[in-house]
Length: 545
Image (cartoon, rainbow, N blue to C red; front, side):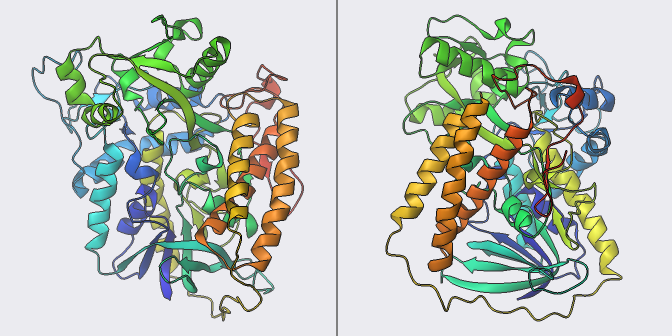
C-alpha cells in the first residue's frame, strides 16, 4: 500500500491536515477503531480563539502563559493563538455548526458580541474573557463529524478504519546508513488480523494522548499513547511527560465510564461543593471554580482525602432550568441516565486523567527528529501547553498545526521523491498464538492501578521509585511476551502504554519541584531556577534538560 502521505489518527488534527493537502496527493488516514472514536469526538467544551471585541490576542497569550506555569514556549503560544480566528473561520467554512448568539435571550446573563461571526462564546478556567466557541456542549462531535464528512467526499483520501499502527519503518530500522528517514509503518488490520506494510513519502502521527495509562480517565479506550511510543522507538526525543492533566470533573458513578462534565458548567456559574453543601474552592484560589485545571483537580483531591469522601459535588441548579437545558443538553441527558437531574440537584464529580501535555518534540512545522516524520495534536510537544494546558486550547492546536504541517509537506512534495527502498514483510514465522491472554489483562490492570496510586495528582519520590521498579519488571514481561506470541491490538496497546508509563515516571523523578500539573510532597514549591527548563528524554543518549 503506497501513499504520498500516511496520517495515523482520524481526529481533528489528522483530518484537518488531510483536508488542507492538495488534491493530487494520495492520502491514507488510519483509525484503530471506528473513524470517529477518539478524543476529538468526546470533547464537550469548545475551541478557544479571540473573537469578542472586548478580547485581545495578547490577553489570550498571557492567559496561556500563566496557565503553563513558566514552561510554555512563547513563540509556540503566539504562533497558535494568532491563527485562532483563521482556524474558526476555516471550521465555519467547512460547515461546523457552532452555536450562535440569540438576541434578547433571557436565559443568558451575558451575550458575547462578535463583530464577525456572531458566535456565542463561553468562558472556562484560566481564561480572562469569553473566548470559547462551541457547538452546544458537543463541540468535538460537531467538528469530528463535519471534517469526516468532508474527507469522505475527497477522492484522494482513503479512510481506513480498524487499522492499528504497530511500528514505524525508518531507514535506520532497516539498517540503512545515512540520514534516518521514516518511510512507512507496519499496520495491523484488526478485522483479518494481517499485518501489512504501508509505504509513504511522509508519515504523520496524530494519535492523541496517553491518559489510558491511568485507572480513571475521561478518555476513550484508544488513548494509549501509540504515537509517542512509536516515535520513541525510532529515535525521537520526548519532553515534559510528567505533566499529565487531570480533568477536575468527571461524573462519579459505577457505570459512568469516562463521562466528562464539561468545564463550561463551571464557566457558566457552577459551584463545587462538599457533602455538607459548603464551597471550598475560594480557600485554594482567588479564581475559585475558574482557576486552571491543575489547581481545581488538586483541591478536589485534597478535600476527598481530608474528609475520606468518594466525590465532591458540582452544582448549577441555582440557574434557571431553561438556561441549563439550552447550554448543556447532552450533559443533562447523560446525567439523567445515571439518576441525576442537574437542573434540580448537585451531581457527584471526581478528577480523572484527561490530557497529555508532553509528547514528541516538534518544531512549528510539526517536524520531529526523524526526517519525513511529523507529529501533531496531543501526541506532540510544541511548547504551547507548558506545565498545564489551558482549557480549549487543544482543539485550536489541532487545527492550526494541521494547516502548518500541510504547508510544509506541500513545499517538500515538489522537490522530494519516495525513497526507493524495499521494505520486508512482517515476519511471524517464529511466534505462536497465545493461550494465556490473562497475562495481557493482568499487566494492563496492574500498570494502570499503580500509575493511579503512585504517579497521579499528588506524588512523592518514594511513590515514583516504587512505580519505576514495577514498570521495569512489567516491561521485561511484556517484551518476552511480545517476542513469543502473535501480535494483537491489545498487546500493541499494552506495549505502548508501558513505554508511556516509563517516560512519565522517569520525567517525574527528574523534576524536583512542584510546577503546574506535577505536584510532589517532597518538593512542594516551584524552583525558580527550573522555569523554562523542559524535561527532555532522548532514546539515543542519556537524559538531558
